[in-house]
Amino acid sequence: MPRVLLVVCGGIAAYKAVEVLRGLQRAQCDVRVLCTRDALEFVGAATWEGLVHHRVSTSLYEDAHSTIPHIELATWAEAVLVVPATANILAKMACGLVDDLASTALLAVPKTTPVVVAPAMNTHMWLADATQRNVATIASRGVEFVLPVEGHLACNEVGTGKLAPVESIVECTLRALKGRTCQSLSGRHVLVTAGPTHEAIDPVRYLANASSGKMGYAIAREAALRGARVTLVSGPVSLSEPRGVQRVSVVSASQMRDAVMEAFPQCDVAICAAAVADYTPANPADHKLKKASEHMDCIRLVETTDILAALGAAKEEGGRRRVVVGFAAETNDLVVHAQDKLARKGCDLVVANDVSRQDSGFGTDTNRVTLVAPNGVDELPTLSKDEVAERILDRVEELLAKAEGGMR
Ligand code: PMT
Image (cartoon, rainbow, N blue to C red; front, side):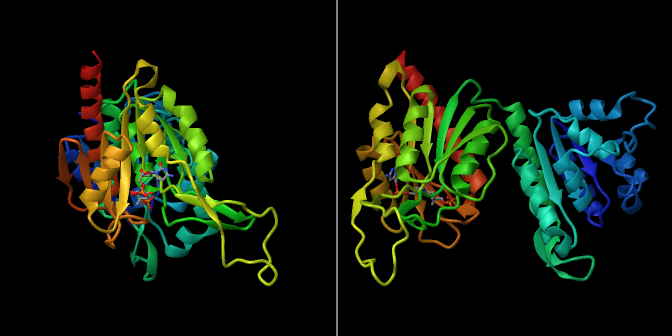
């Protein structure tokens, strides 16, 4: 049974942590509960103990069964979930402050154990600079957030701060656990590209597109959860790199090409989800162009290197058969365009991405894709980008097995 440590903090949403616990138990998880003292003001120990048939842990000193409860709990868990995460626990996590069992156990969680945090609080507290900075700090360490949603809050205000839906929290924890238990890409090196590129016109202006990086980051996260070593070559985005992923930050298409070509020889798989500029200004100015005196009505463009096509051409170099996956962002004739890219760019799989829909493509949390391979087409329904990443990596695993069969 997968082991989850549920850390419950003192907020009104603590009662929803009970539903989260039940959801995890329905999914066959073995859950232990650690409550802060304040959390027990909202939901008492009797409720937790009745549900987990285990003593609820609250203190560094009062547990007769364990001499070092924070270490025992932190190392017992295969995943740790904090719900509701208050502004207080976020502040403690961000700066490593330990003054009770919850904060001490959280600091003692090994780096390889996934941690999922679901905050809930008053909207001003959530939006406060201090809280947002703490969230960014914690996320930069690879901790997964199930962000609060907008709604009517207990304090009678309407705004962001309401605990995310219980199903999303359970789903995120199960996904994190799956990575711990299913290491199907262990020993593999996966290269992922994500985000846009910025092509300089002058020092302050550039050509770009609306890619947020969400799709590529979801793929990198899923590959890392499956045990792969992951190199994520990312254009400028506001996302934190997923836990266990090595990010190489680039700005322009030529920088992305250099970073990708350097990493590719050591890789088993390359997945190109970045929206790379096809053209870049031929002669970017070295000073800010003046509106009145310099012509802005004509910027001469030159083609960038097609990175994906270069990978497709190099995939068998060094006696190794790599799997290359491209994307095709299309507004019409999805499959026809994707089949063309599959052949022209030497890919093993092309993810045809419908970017004409509101629930799909650039910046969205969901995506509508069709997986196009030489032997067939698999149209998927609208799914979260995390689910799309899972489906792509399932196919990648099949392709890896097939490629290795063919090399023998
Ligand atoms: O980042 P999000 O907001 O989550 O949005 C996700 C996405 C829509 C950006 C993503 O799902 C997607 O479709 N990525 C590919 C976007 C794109 O540039 O498509 P394309 O059809 O123009 O390019 C085809 C393929 O060639 C892509 O794999 C692209 O990475 C690659 N390419 C393109 C140009 C170039 N110079 N080098 C490349 O490698």
